[in-house]
Image 1: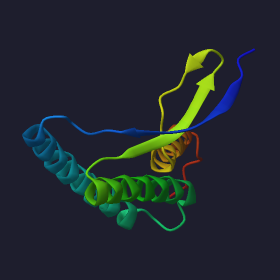
Image 2 (image 1 turned 180 degrees about the vertical axis):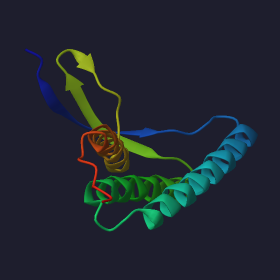
Image 3 (image 1 turned 180 degrees about the horizontal axis):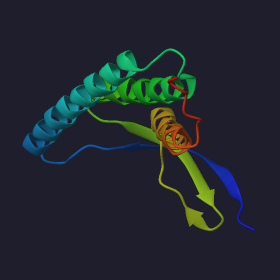
Length: 124
């Protein structure tokens, strides 16, 4: 049986050593983050209020994206600090925003898979 356990906190900064690469990478990642934020925001806006699971998943994705984007703008990098293991496998160090995005994407996948099982309303 595999055990998942929390190992501790450690700071991991995702930056670059060469300044020009760091600046261009920061700019590209920030722009991509803004584009993703707009796309997910529009999808959130257009989702029906009754579709709670999809709205929840999109809210988690938006919250995580905003968190990582603010971290990147404020400090020039995203700081990962949650360190965990799955059995003897060292999981990638991550942060709360990454967790929100991952949970949101999982819930979105569940919603999409369950959408095919919902009964179709009769038009007659």
